Image (tube, rainbow, N blue to C red; front, side, top):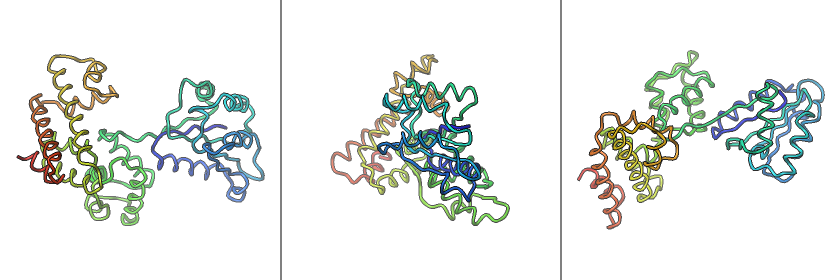
Length: 324
């Protein structure tokens, strides 16, 4: 397949896929000649990639032209789009043009449409590497499992949960920590929760996870995560603003559910949530919890905000506002 379209914000997984492709198609003896690494953000390098993609490989193996930050499917200028469309049928059969971008391809562009037609015909290939959202616990567990599979590790269920708590959706750190764990796992590659706690330090957290701990009735966990954010230099009032918005969203979803509303688009709009798919996750989170629970949490966040604005230290303000 001459063109490989790789996109998404999971840079670690993208890089693994790129290196695997390089290992598969290039002859090591000829890689210095047949491998080009270019940057589409640099002037002229996107055009250079098209020129080099029309060049057959030298010696044994295939040729690979890697274009990071490719502009062809994201904000592509008209002149460059013309060159891209002209080059589609001219790429050498044994040459691979790898287009990489963190952003999703813009389906409105004619370059994207032309490439998608070829992908549907099986002429080219597309791979997506998207990180789960910070609120998507199930997605983060899948990320841990996929990465563990890629490095050849078997993780116990509790070990997966511990890695999610420690790392979240930081895929680069996740891969690094898993490779460190693999050195201690032995030939069987089995990793339990004790080994994760021993070797993987820290507590990955964000303001939404503080809110999740409050929702689950775990004030100690919420305080630990708040403290971790403060120690990392996160402004306290910004954390409160995020928590307030999160809790207000829960309140809206809960109220509309009680009223019998089932249209997720309507609920998302009323709750100020940009992604309607998140409503399905929130419904599971909120099941069995009455709206008054969220009204109480909102009141506590207002108390934390008031204490901060009166000059209390962030850690004291959160404890006193939450537990007072």
